Structure formats: C-alpha cells, structure tokens
Length: 198
Image (cartoon, rainbow, N blue to C red; front, side):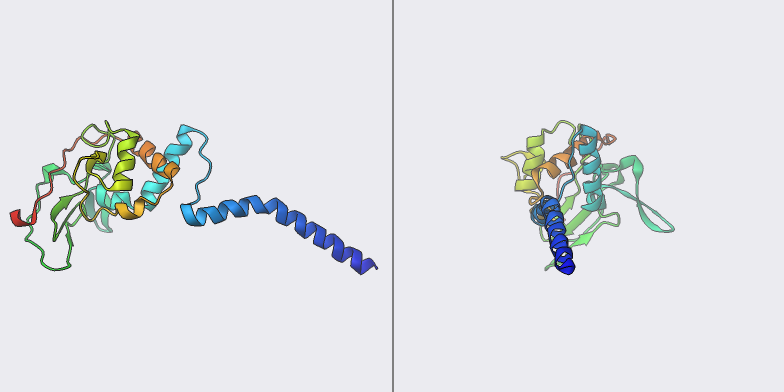
C-alpha cells in the first residue's frame, strides 16, 4: 500500500513538472523552425541581439576588410562593416570560366561567371545603410534587391540572401538596429564589373 502511494505521488509530481515545463518546450520547438529569439524588451536588447546575429551569421567575413598578421586575417576595426574599401583599388582578375569563384585575399571582392562583385558597405554611414529604412533592409534580405529598392537589380553572388530570408522578422529588425548603431565608415563601394569587362 505504501509503495502504491509513493508511485502515485511520483506520477503526480512528474505530471506537474511536465505541465510546468511544457510552455518552454513549445518555445524550443518553435525555435527549431524559425530560430529561437530571447525576449528583446528594450532597444539595447535588440541591438545586442543584432550584434550577436551579425557575428554568428558571418557578416564580417565579407563586409569587413581584414589586416594580415602572424595569426592570419583579422578584421580591421577602423573600417569594420564598411564593405570593399574603394581606396585600396580594384584587384586585377581575369574572367573565371566554369563553376569556379575566386575571392580577394580579404574576402570583400569576388569574381565568377557573373563578373566581379564587391561587398556592400553596411555600416551606419550614409554611404552605407545610414539613410535606409527598415523596409529597405527587409527587401534586401527577403527579396535580394540591391539597396532594398524594389526596382533595383538583384544582389550578386556571393551574398547568401536566399538563406537569410528565412530569418524571423524580429531577428532581421535586430540586425538592422545593430548595423544602424555601428561606427560609420565613409566608403563608396565600386559598382560590379560585368564578365566582358574583366
């Protein structure tokens, strides 16, 4: 009789724990599909989340120039998120035939069958995204449109917007809030070069 009471009490306790934990399990399951986002109650929280996302999504890999030292390439903090730095000059490259793509040493320029493309300035400067609306930023990541303008050209490789378009709205807003908070880098990125001009 005493064993049965212990089993019943343990079962009631387990059901209670299950009911208490169930809401957080739902959140975790939803996160598996759309990306779990911790609550962002203040603008500072949103910016901090955006900084985290920019870091883990690798935005600096292409949008920040690098300095080379003994440990290899390191982000140049003076021009972070400023894109391909125009004053460095356009690298020389030949047309690439076939399915190959080549990167400039600091990854801010790429050449392939589409020609040569340059990483955009996504700093808060007016030559970057300083004058953009949130709607423009959404259009860049959701539709792959240059500068987020509906009648503009499509983004060129290697920008992986097709994957980023699956980010939840609040994460895109967080990325935008962080980018708007960054140090402005005055830099007008060169226009892409068509394959027949290489």
